[in-house]
Image: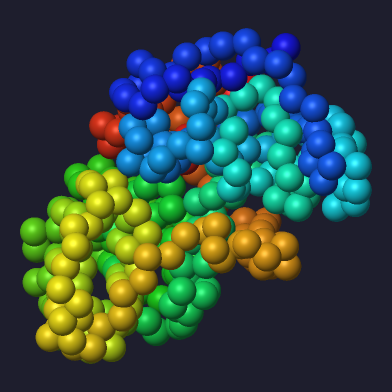
Length: 323
């Protein structure tokens, strides 16, 4: 047997139960990994509450982790027993051991720890595709990053500064503003009520070519109003709730704007894309240009407490669960 956090019905943190489950057997094209660390992400909350529909119940949530390959199924050639690996993607992470499609695993470089690997795969690869593909940020750009002191936000602040861009980071309090500035944000704005005025002031009225918004409902309009004509709004999260339906004519009225709702799954669906995104991330982390902040750790069996802290905006940087 192995241990896992399982959900039998959607609800609050109390629905996550620490249970014995059969040790999985790796099937064809799968690998069995022993987790050393598991990443905590807001998407885990969405699956727990039912905002994102579970494929079945009972459900083991969690989409990110790092550990050691302890067995492989038939036809597996990309990893071998003993490899240090990390992943982001398939559900089933809140467990001490799990079987996973081997083509979703990437080998973790020796200079990156398991905790760092578990903390950065989902958030770091999200930052990579947003900054390098959804809108390719270049030196001289000024960009808006919401939740700039969160896991994705701190990575984006550092990476964008490394590229040569100016980051306007949106945060909820002064403590988080200081954290965002320490990680490369040139400017910080507390709350979104003054966002448009501050962007106008900072850019001399030019506004910005891209806004990265993980907050959703509460910030959507202010984000659109911060864009320059032909600007791109990347709405990649719903921390305040999903964006309600709206008239697409608004995009025309506000300057022929672009709007996308991207996901990491699409950007890493092909094995070659996954390897490319991960390699780019490992390079900037390995070089020290981007530092992954694991600011909280919780025992896996206390995942409920971790969710409470995350939803209360009491966490900064990344949080990992330790089996």
